[in-house]
Image: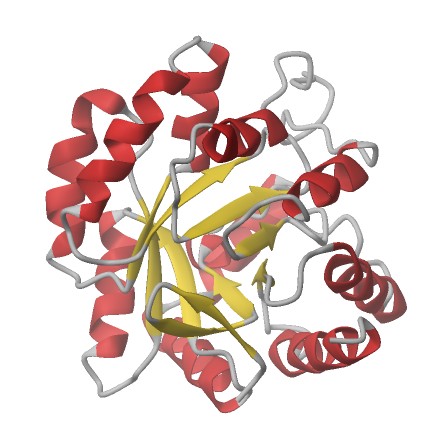
Length: 271
């Protein structure tokens, strides 16, 4: 088992596997999207989740997308103890219905979707964040807040919203000035975001999961570069924080490599 973090009453591995590769969402280009979709049949996805458990990773994260929920649900039905950290839908109008549908798959914890939190922030509606969190609490699972904006996370702290955990993207893809037609994904990753978000993570009172620490593949040209991103993450966060990483094992055993980088980085951080 990898070192763990405490989310509510859950012992969660400090490396969590993300589900975006299962649905071909690479944040890189359409060719990589297609390669992921073609590779991740249900058989391959389940095989990778088994491999994650063997490597000491005990949690998978996904949004409440029904095909992904069904895939994870069928995997867990085989007897797996894999924890499922769920994210809500992105739309206030369908929030309640999507939450009810999600509960049919027994999430271990639920986080307000980062894009929903971000939209509330950009539209001057962050005062609705607490009520959404209360809706999640009624489901009797640990609850969290995700965002790409440091300002959202600090708002939750200043208003004492007391989530069980946070999820924080170290790259902010939702700044209004970040969309760019000449970039294949329409997303611009700015390195200046990274130290700013890590600085905020250190101030948060709840355990925090950092996501996009590898820049959705942009910091993966060499394994030394990947390892350095893990070292940076654990050196920059609080003791007991973790990381969320999507993994694509088709060409290289990213699961075992990332598990080892996590162990090494935690040890190097002096915890």
